[in-house]
Length: 189
Image 1 (cartoon, rainbow, N blue to C red):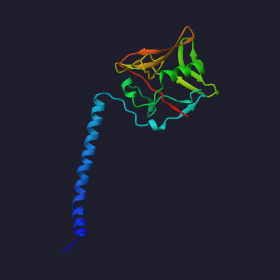
Image 2 (image 1 turned 180 degrees about the vertical axis):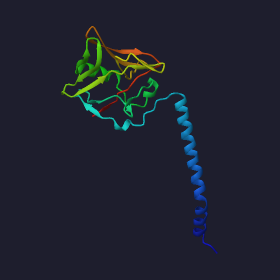
Image 3 (image 1 turned 135 degrees about the vertical axis):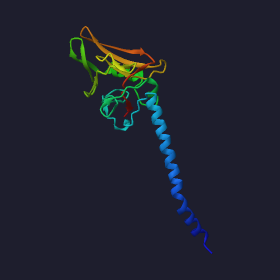
């Protein structure tokens, strides 16, 4: 007579492969369908958010700003505001603090902006290079800087910087629901 442990071992050996095959087939099919749906809906997904470097600018709040916009394989990622919900984008208040506490200078000639240099109270710097925005699947306003910010009272709030008459201009109240903009991340010390 075969002991129960031996019988269970034989049963497991005979059936484990089939159970694993079914489980892996289901996981593969679910992932394939999700990827197809994202592609069909033109959803831009970045899987590399963990590689973000942050810069301490010496801000009173202790907020650290990402050293660059989020990218995927070296290319800027443009997303609709709705896809920033789970990302640590700056709040409008963090943007106001940066704008107030930092020294700003534009890089470019005449009315052609290349980047905006931000120097924090401690002397560390960030560059906000021109990004443009994606509107109806093409990049427009390519000579300007854009990125999303979170606001408690406004929906689809973004920062927008440009040069006019050799002066740097900024607006953080630009709102539109059909645009895709790049994102910068923040975190606390």
